[in-house]
Length: 125
Image 1 (cartoon, rainbow, N blue to C red):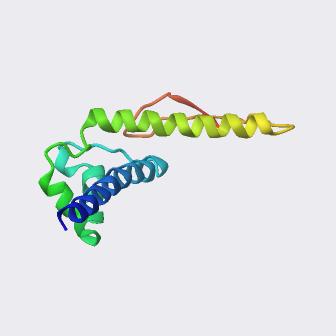
Image 2: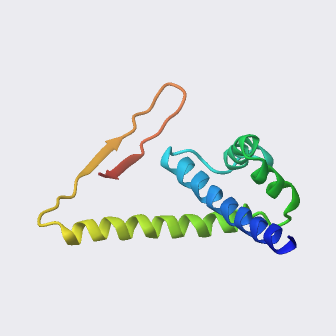
């Protein structure tokens, strides 16, 4: 009985870091910042709290853990892993393709009446 309860808890604890990674993927995919002025007000933590409303195990995990894998260093490390995975996928697709092209788009932001800027932005598509 105790071992089955312990194994279930281990399974639940493995799912929580996966939700952290999916939150990082979602926020970065939408071009939203992860961090705010305070850690509790950050987009990342607010999304974690929102998902915890629908998942009691996640809420429990967030409350009881002292190291929740949500620190800035962990987020940066996970983002590096996700970015590397995306790059590997793109590289694999290019290697498997007979032909490929690289597109580049350049935009210049023009000054407005309240904000003066002369930044140029380059985006690879």
